[in-house]
Amino acid sequence: MNTVKVKELEAVAFQTYGAFANLVNPTAYGFGKPPVQFFRDIIQQQIGEATTVSYSICRVEPRPLVIGSGEYHNRCCEGILPIDNDILIHVGPGTHPRAGMPVEQFEVFRVPKGTMVVLRPGVWHHAPFSANDQPANVLVALPERTYVNDCEAVRIEDEEKKLRIVE
Image (cartoon, rainbow, N blue to C red; front, side, top):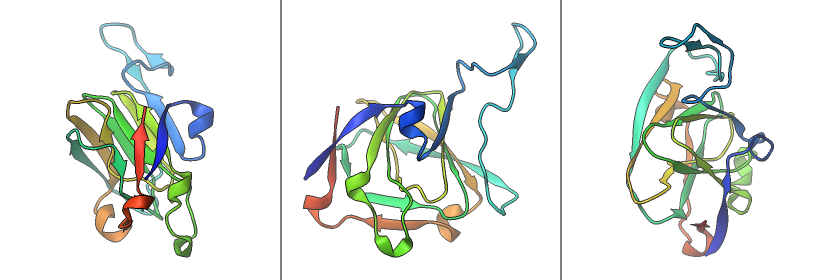
């Protein structure tokens, strides 16, 4: 089994896969002064032809840091926001559908809680991992029913082709 090292989330390293913004400590322009401030238009998420964004929770318990599957969406971006714990996400560049999953090109990034990541269409990814020994509740924003009508998922059956995440 090969390994992949965790990288800190950084704009240049992540730009191939999408965008991110710290929503808890925003640097964006804001209206008002404490005790009420509004920080607008911090990050955008393209939803394709859909008209409804659906917000779901993906609860991830601590588990072995082994990448054994991937998925991508053709027609929309996916928003990922860890609410109460840091997470690790694996991503890979978009490929032609017949090219297969580019496991050897996967990268892993640490996403601090409160930081929204928006993955571009076609970017390989799958359920995040908790970054420590505590569960993480992750808000996922996708057009309604994307997991049924725009999700290409692949499992890695060969143990030797799976990736172990290392710090």
